[in-house]
Image 1 (cartoon, helix red, strand yellow):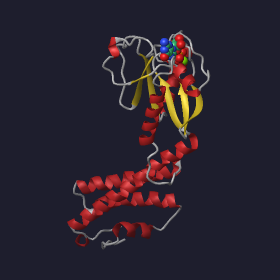
Image 2 (spheres, protein in one colour):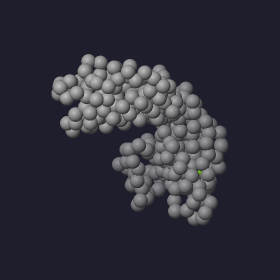
Image 3 (cartoon, helix red, strand yellow):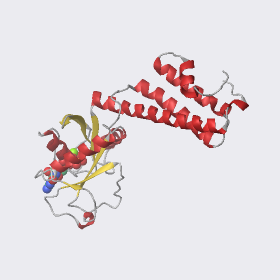
Image 4 (cartoon, protein in one colour):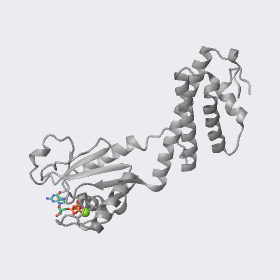
Length: 267
Ligand SMILES: Nc1nc2c(ncn2[C@@H]2O[C@H](COP(=O)(O)OP(=O)(O)OP(=O)(O)O)[C@@H](O)[C@H]2O)c(=O)[nH]1
Ligand SMILES: [Mg+2]
């Protein structure tokens, strides 16, 4: 592409900028539907994790309605990640119980904890469960993308947790479990199932769209930094190429026209 200097005024560049911004928005919305597609096909990955003895396996069993995982007062009972499917108000969940986190005592436990970390990396929702009848561990940390749950509310809560804003449950008495289900549903509803488009795209489509989105972002950044069109043409070309590949070959002219229809641009 070749952009004659005199063909494009600063106003035109502003229009191109606005058009690219709305294009990027549309592309990003489509990318979000890839997540929805995966979730509809495979189920949403909900991972229960936390220190040993917090009640992770008890929570899995409670949510399943039967004793799938071994529960005991011995720290480090669960050695491997356990997966079960449940249906939460029509949403398919893949629920994972994991090996409790603590400094491993042997190789098997170390391997189990590494599996916990890997399971967490691919989680859509992380349920961080703690035993609130005990003190808050010195190295305790949680972050906003985790859902903190204080378990064992049938026992006296340790003062360390008194100002902690978290949902309180008891796997022993089932207290708080309906609230927990409400909250899980609320979080997945807003985070993962709100894509506006009914189209659920696959992973290959998603990768092409990400390429297009990144290229458009680079062009937008260049425009923001005062670049002239020939300086960001390469990015638009990349974006166009990604979309062409997505559509299975394609009409370069049509894509270019859609972006530049009102401008006089040589090719
Ligand atoms: N009082 C009380 N005890 C509970 C509750 N939930 C679990 N427990 C007990 O806590 C102990 C540990 O429960 P688990 O579910 O095995 O804990 P875990 O987090 O899976 O432990 P690891 O597999 O060792 O990491 C068991 O003795 C349970 O019976 C609860 O809500 N209240
Ligand atoms: Mg366990």
